[in-house]
Length: 461
Image (cartoon, rainbow, N blue to C red; front, side, top):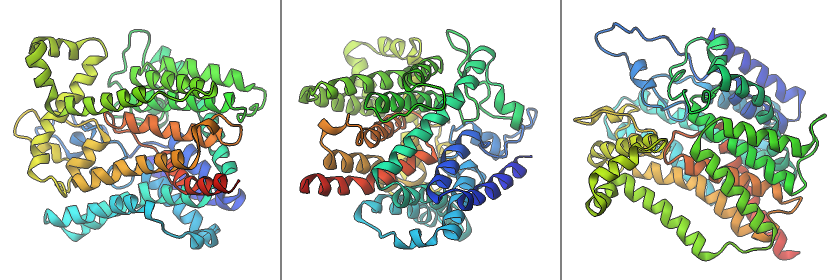
């Protein structure tokens, strides 16, 4: 069943490159494929087996389709292959015009380091090439598509509108699952390993729809709601059929709230406050920027053992109690998992262990790591983790340098600014979740290309 769906999606996606302009074919595959395709060919594990299968172990990691697990074909690779074949067959002239730049280096490192990591750990050349090809198809292809097709203001606005439309399509599905619980993935694709993981909430259930986990939807919908808000307030979000733009924004914000992800909603609200400050011409105070940087660094320190220092000051019981309060219990679980994972990471820091289940190397308390950066660090080492961080940070930095903040609420420059904020939200969430989507990497490629262009254009204006 799943193989049939993947095959039909591949054929349909390639056809779209001939029916539609190639840029819109990319949009349909990256966003539509991510929103609708199954995650992978999940098989119901045997509950009475004496030893867990690799698949059973894989689903416990939360690895999703961001990194390779015990299987190569996932929604990420199917989408990547579809876009790659579509671009090569239908629009090879655009691919041929692409020229590598210095800011492409992090993506190159991220794609090549699985090969080096596997060889360093004396794995077979077949496994090494398989690991590298996963990164190239799942990450490299969407990034290249962003560099080729979303290097100007109009295409980026189209990409933003497409994400908003995808969010609107998810609204009724989220509403139904808020009341009934996750039903749609099982209805269409049968078994899903995270079907009931963290589903119960204070009010109703946390939706999942067709994504990999409720926490992934919990950042995706607030990020789309903020994207719609930013574009509407800057005057760049059109009326979608019969739905006025302000109604679109209100509906998406409400849906983001019922997804019941505290972190996602908090980041959405902070983004709205940032827009209001920028619209008023208020420069974001440097103390606020410094304070946010300290907060992020402090979280990193807390994750890597700083809670023990805090415990010496206020008492270890209070720290443990703080981790256990309401939703902080989830945060505490992630922090503890990261701390326990430092043991195998420290034993092979530079190129990692080259295996997706590296966390199994822990001597005690073998719990998975629900962090995209943590997974990259353990599997492929510090060079890979730094390259992964740079994939997010450099596009943001390129746009900030190229476009003054006073123009971020402009009707023309509002959409790329909103997409940059969309990228920031997902980057922050990636520290505690395996956050990933093909459209997200496409945005990074587009912002990397348009940032230097805006800098030159505004300087000569």
